[in-house]
Amino acid sequence: MSKVVDKVVDSLTSVDNHKSAGIGRRMKAARDALGLTQEGLAAAVGGSKRGIQENEARNRVPGGEVVARMVDLGINANWLLAEEGPMLLADLMAKPEPPKLNVPALTAILEGLLKAGAPPDKAVAAAFEFYQINIDRGLITAEGIGVARKNAA
Image (cartoon, rainbow, N blue to C red; front, top):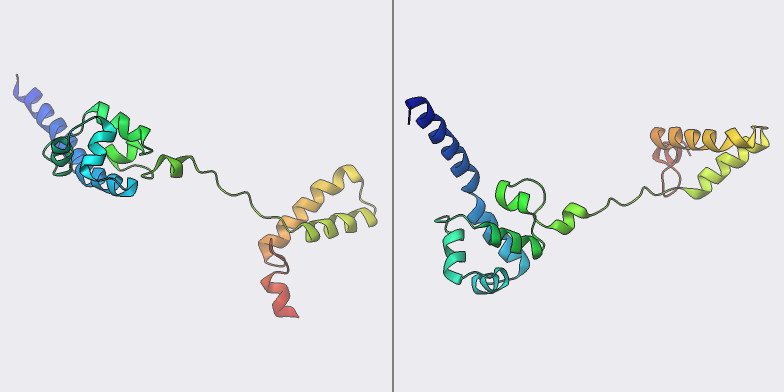
């Protein structure tokens, strides 16, 4: 090989080694999170206890089959291999809780707009806009009266 190619290959190898250096540590953390011993993880992934020990000691990078089986156990492969994202697939797929809504406040706003003569087709959008303005200003919260209103009382 030429000196340029050797340099590129060495550079790529060092990058791969740098990325893989933490795999053993993450593999142990994943095993602990799953509540498994080295022997238990070996049985779960179809490997050997010695292989798991070698992986965790960073003497050997786990093969694709081991990684795939860990994904089957609920471990995020991106986290395991590159420490990107959460450890557990369940955390990766968790949906955020929808925002709470102060229904009495929104109802009062809508009723006020309708009593003031706002056309019904425009009153709903206006009520949500006014509601959000009051949330942003701290006049109301999703749970009730806002901080600004309590301080004025």
